[in-house]
Image (cartoon, rainbow, N blue to C red; front, side):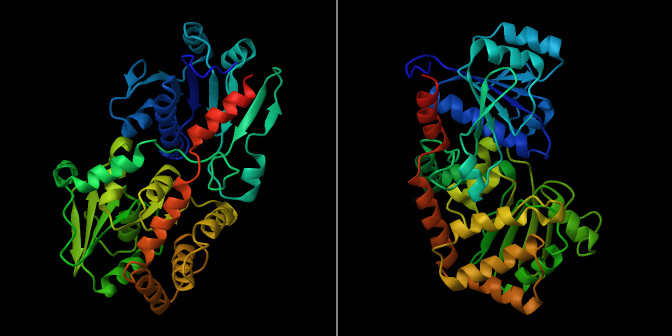
Length: 392
């Protein structure tokens, strides 16, 4: 029975597979559950060190930002830990991480709402399968939760006070200066821009750097992670010692590249709020760029046989549906090239970028899309309704 006034408990389980991608979504989900439902949240993770990169205070056995952290240990230790905990209202396995026997036994005993929290997708099949039950061998029903952009999907993770947080930060020059100082981030150059590159390796990064240099606009590029710099280094564009450590700078002409420190998840939004545009990867940063109303290109995780491309195309078919045709065409061309769906001539690439730089065009489109998403219920709002309907 889901009782709205009852103190609630959630158990989450995650295995770290794709760098910080899976654990990043799980940590965001844990924070949203805690904040929205005032729930006691327990998170089991098989690589606590990976979580610590996102939340520096995370440690097995500790409470970090209100979430109880547990190392996903052997079954005997896990069973002992579970025995000391109150029954959960929600039991969430993220991305089909295959729960061990002690957890399955507690599901059969406690009968929580059992969810498989799946990867985000804009494809139509995901909305069709959202919230569908699957009867398991222990007699319990497991429901598939597909976050997405369609009203029929499981929604997106969004804090209730996100707009207020963003507005307050953008209005507070002292807070902005303190954040810049903490991570060594310079102001945007006079008459220029700041771009954030949180992306995967690509053979096209040398051509894109040449594109930005030819654009003639002063540009600070913040490099989060190492893969963009690794691609430039492999192509001989930068030296072996260049951009190896946080704070390192490489500049040619009006384009300045800076390797920035790893920013914890709790502060990543501020990084987006200070940028003029971004190239983002993964799932969590991709969604946060949308809430930030930030013009962006999504560098989706590349998969064999280009199976990532339908997922990429399905998203932009929704997000860019109302864009002016010239903007949509230019953005599609650049997005396709970076994501391995054909290449562009230097002239075509430059023309596409110049279209994106038409004053106001790309930012207005990003803002309109964010406003469309904000009109939909969040994932937590949808989960509350689903819980009331299911746990009767």
